[in-house]
Image (cartoon, rainbow over all chains, first blue to last red; front, side, top):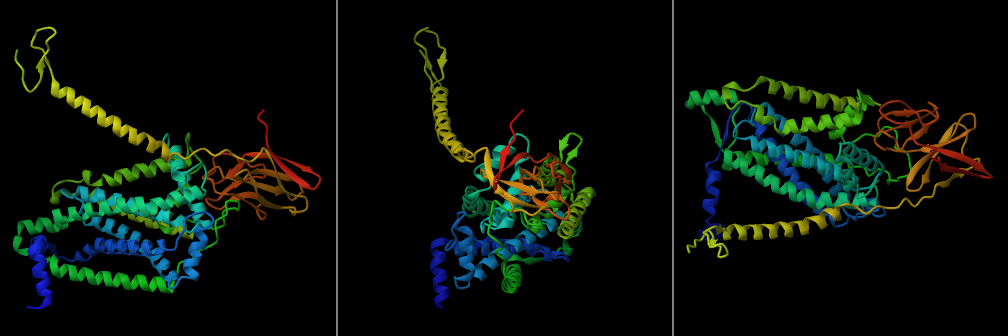
Length: 361
Length: 161
């Protein structure tokens, strides 16, 4: 008997290892032309793990504080060996993770995987997307540079536009009336403690739901396969699909490494509350579509302030988005076409406005 | 006199009106738990609200020196803990106003090519009196009084009429 087998046998006798793996062995993944889209959630999870690991590494040198934050990131990038690479991986992986999370969401939407009984998987996923954007927003401020300073000012000011609860919420986020060192302390706390905790819990729930409910089949195929079970094609999750997923992770790692090494992330200029916002200032790409929309809304619409209207509309759209599965039919043969229409429009709007925002002066 | 696990008879009226003992314990315990929770939650909620900082700036500051600004230019100065904008117009006149954009509080700047005050964040524009003239700003910038005393340019808040 090989030593490895001995260890496995020893562990199995004590942990009932085989019993734990049994459901994974039974789990299957439907096989069809669009199966590749099933990789995206896993890739997002992989990038999140990279974020946690590189985030912990950055914590070894980073110091929050208006007089230290910028300097400590500068120190990481210029003095610490491979510090520039660790920070660059953290920034690139963050951006890729937001991209794959968006792609995962739209693939779920177009494959109609959010239908009964997977409504809660969708809801937890959309909340995860909001959390990930919160990660992006809070992490962006931590190097305490000019762009981040104004992005935070505008972002928190937008929160302040929400009627009634907006102002107290803004003061809570900023740690005062203005964006100061107090804001940096709070954002640091959100970024390294509050958000990781919440996100980890929610990822566990999300993955548990996927395990419990199995992987969704596109409605057309579901109808076909139910009528004619002999047509059904699937792949074992363990090890067949998992090995393919691992290859996808390996490719993602390659892309990430190349981007981080070839295009190291900039640090910019240290924030100064007493300089003007620089020309051409823009938020990160994943906030661009909202930024551009706010820019286009006139100052007054009827009797409501433009930005108040913008914030209310975005809030309402976000809420409806969260509840989208509850508007869908329970029957795979009667799925609602207008939801697909909404999805196409949303994708076109987000993509179009982002490009417009990127190109606009 | 019957007793049950649901309650006990009340000896004062001699009737068998049960005092629900279980209910009593539930209310006592539940109320206790609620009070304990409130005793934890209230301080935490108050803790989350940052203490108010007093604006240490006085009503008047020195925003710059005569000769520092060329005609048709502007600069940011500190007014308490907020930024202010001092402009010297093309005709040589001084103007001062808050530099915090009324749209989403970015810090504005003077554009010599436009001869206007401009906010880079959302392309808001104001005239030299701080009036919002284009883009998303909903209100004018707060204007300040400018006084040149000797070599120094003083800026002060306008008195409420």
